[in-house]
Length: 64
Image 1 (cartoon, helix red, strand yellow):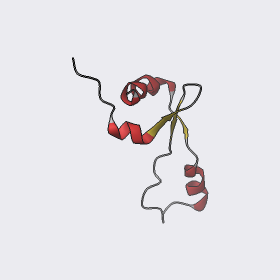
Image 2: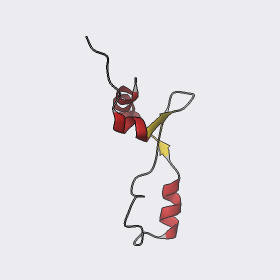
Image 3: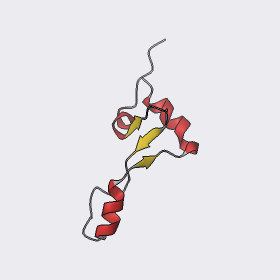
């Protein structure tokens, strides 16, 4: 049976922490930034953790 391949898109978007949680970046930060307030853009710089409900699916995608 062939090896499982990592999902390339997921590999670029998620990182594992030392404790095993999955870090992610905030969405809505790529374009049409003129209509967003400075406060909103500043808060979008900060990332977050993947929700527990999605963590299992993301973990399957990023395992090599």
